[in-house]
Image (cartoon, rainbow, N blue to C red; front, side, top):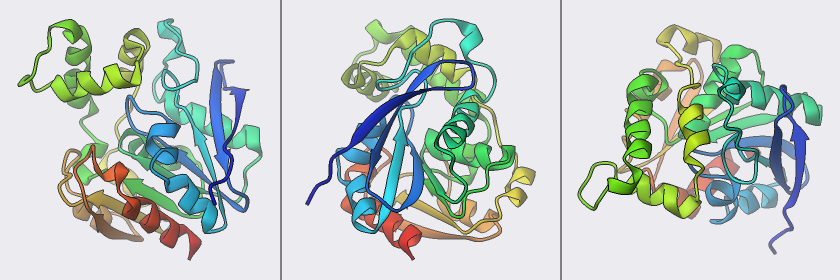
Length: 252
């Protein structure tokens, strides 16, 4: 039986209001969604949060800054380097979390790694839709999306940016805020991974190599295992097996 999602807002480190959605009761797991998405699209719509709740966990799902129902400031000063890490730290502090798990999809996974490098200490970590190469070189990845934003009204089918622009339209992305956010994301270098010592699940679609090799990422981490689910980078979030894999790992 599907549970009710409770939503609230909190003030982040700089006073920016962010939305957070919660489902279930039990051990908390903070879940960070991907770029241009939101908690509902990544975690709620396709049942992943409910699968975690059914496994005795509480899914805590913020809408990242400039996404979903969170604030979308247009002031460049609202996007310091690693602002998403600072927001995650503020959420953990706001909720008083001391014993929790942390997971993310794509940009959310990248952010989760940056959170651990910055000092957060979840019991377990889930990195979905992420490969080793995707943790660094963000400048090139960001440039692709910034170009898509800048050419938003000119992009047509067949253009490499067409899928990104289509998704932004579906999600009603605030392009000014998104452009600023894209320039705030920091890289994680190979040496940083030695600090990610907690048990980690690397889970990725069998047709998803958008962020590099998930197997190489699992091998580079001190205590990680790799699990494959069906789908591409876009479609794997619709697969029940994604939530099932996360629930098995965190519920074990």
